[in-house]
Length: 376
Image (cartoon, rainbow, N blue to C red; front, top):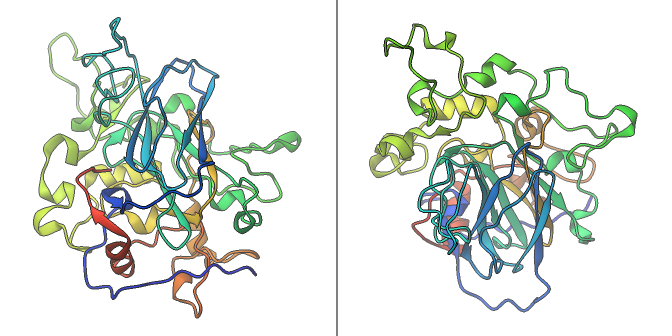
């Protein structure tokens, strides 16, 4: 078994935070070849992906139009840190400004001038987070607008070649129009799905039904609620009301800005903030995605650095449940140690497909990053 040493450099006495709330310290990027992010639109409609760079050198274009079925590749530095999201139902003026016209993910212009407004499903990357590792995740902390998956592209990196795709490629499908039945099996006729095959199948969540996904967003957090009846009063219970097919959902933190929802103030220290009613609902439909700010332990994917990635909008199928299933299996495979306890083993082991935020990472992050104000 090939082990990658994970060095824990400080005692766990300070706060651990979502890795995207940290900025990498400035350093020389000696490898100019860079990495690629392939952005794919498998949705039925056109979208407008947005990209924000939070550290190092990002792509020349921070936003663009992407037709249904189309792909676009962006180039980023080997130590890039940033996020990708999708905008919906946009229109732009002749100078490229959007002036708030996008229904979700608005960022001021075709070529984004800011991070996208919530709600927006996020793909977040820290390409070089220290100890030769990359950190990445799907995040619903700002809310949800589109189904999304991340697929790792190994780039012939020696440390990545034996890692199975079932451990590295999370997916979040929280929209009924993109959801497959609970009996979903994508491997008929030797087909692949999100880089996986029948010999090493993906761990899909099969617990939620079509009705669960249709109504998962708490009523008060819908950004496009159903039209009121003629008398202006919704019937009770509201679960009987037909919701629109496109049903973006803003997080409780972003809507109400309360400390207990945003894990700030007295709720800031690790362990003092609990998943709220939005987080519970989001985690049910997308187990591998961040559902609140301190969701590191069940949401961050950590692999050896050097990979490129594909971000897929509307991947189809079902949400994955990679991390929880790895924990149940003891967190090990024939090639890598993937359970959240693996980093405690003597000598340290490769951490793949886990979120090991918690207090142990706190010291590590203090050594590697400085706090910045960008949330995620």
